[in-house]
Length: 113
Length: 112
Image (tube, rainbow over all chains, first blue to last red; front, side, top):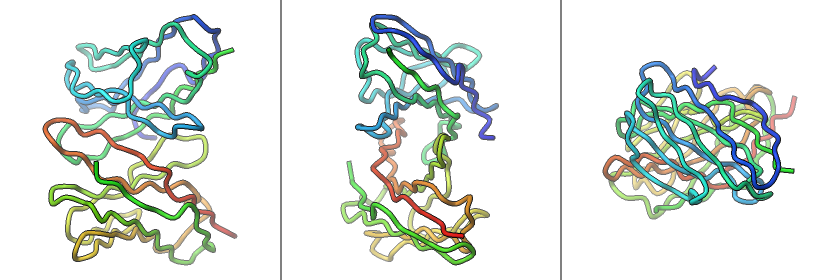
């Protein structure tokens, strides 16, 4: 158990819809990262937050947005969903200092029908 | 970003040591070497990381070449639970951005 909690575990929705994925980091961790894992692209970094502020952006689409709340949990919002957005979405957390391990949740599997 | 090269797959027998290689010839002086693994249907799991010296923890050992252009993750006694995809990653520690850039990794099969 990594201590990172992601909900829901599975999400099935249709094209054009909007969903919110939630992540609770490990106790004491200030930084949250979102990654997307698809069969063709592998694991890709989307975005990082540290203590409520955005710190880095990766290959995140404009239709996607995220935030980190004062209690440090984070949400990833995906809108105008397309079939290609079907993937596993992982959240990770770390203390936020250089080269400290990231601890991953078990992911949310998003299926777009 | 400095890149890593790993074999696509490796096979081992249970209770034997496993040496997983990684080449990173363009590594910079400040890049750390991280290893993560991903078991089936789970999120990636941190294994070990190091900068210049060899490192040991309860899960594995990390041997880093003197010129730092390659490293080897050592599992001392493989178990069936060690079957996973192993990723060798160089940390991008510029500023406050600590994202991990995952490659394809090495799929380790452990035979009973």
